[in-house]
Length: 140
Image (cartoon, rainbow, N blue to C red; front, side, top):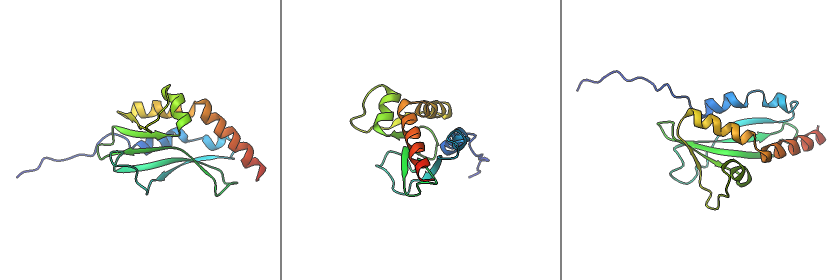
């Protein structure tokens, strides 16, 4: 059999898109907080994706505290990707409660970027960040 020449996809990893979006967050919190991408080694239920990561809100002043903003999973095709959110953020983003903890499906890079921006602009995310900033400052 003669093989055609394969090329790597032009699609960006979900982590790459999110990394771009979280740049500057530490400056926005006066260096008190940061958002990190952490590979998920405890895989979620099957069907969530073979490759998974978590988006974690951290503070260097509170080394043992971490707030999980979201989980994301995808397969070798990269998209669609699935996002699992904390219940209050999910409800604010989607407009309804999520009693079955269903993930949000994003079909492409643009949908992922738009969804992440929505998450970061929720009132709940702002409350979490401002509260953690106050607590973090206490332990400086």
